[in-house]
Length: 115
Length: 115
Image (tube, rainbow over all chains, first blue to last red; front, side, top):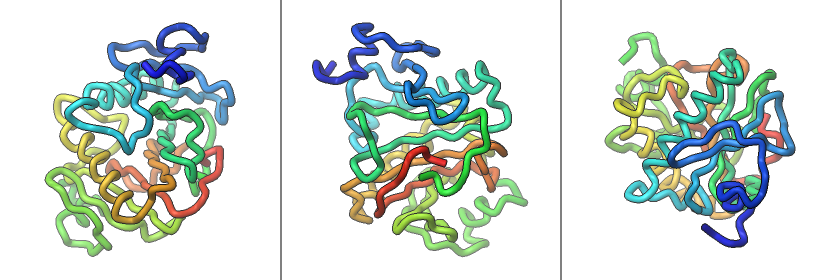
């Protein structure tokens, strides 16, 4: 846990969030600035700053569970017509919290380009 | 291999592409409708239609390598200031080819929402 990380504090329960998925390695909670009818952030419980820091020898369990969580959330939210998954990495992408998070957006037509 | 799948034909070499990454389980090639100075699609060699079909018992090797490939491409393309990774899944997301692909976009400021 990084003591100054808002997402670590959501994992620990020190900051409240609207949690929609809790698993062994990841949690999912609604984005407070939702950009679609369903907009959830799925994060590893472990603190890893950026997806560019992904290390297979350490991080494979949570990577796999990110996608299992996305499937579960898509099913729970009725996103059978489609959804988009997004990782931001670094300043030019607008990454706002330095703790890996995968956005899942659905419930409306999503346009192209993706930002 | 799905015989009617354009991405399977890129994997097999039957359709040309500007390939920038070749690994054991995935390849990466430039998007022919690039939406950013760097815009590459990273795909598993195996035919899986949608990321919602991801099955950990079958697909973990290529999932892990998608992210290793993204790191390598980001490094090769000088995307140290940032990049975005995107999966589309289904009609509402605009998924245009039914073979899993992860977009990596970089080289410009990316806006929000992501489509």
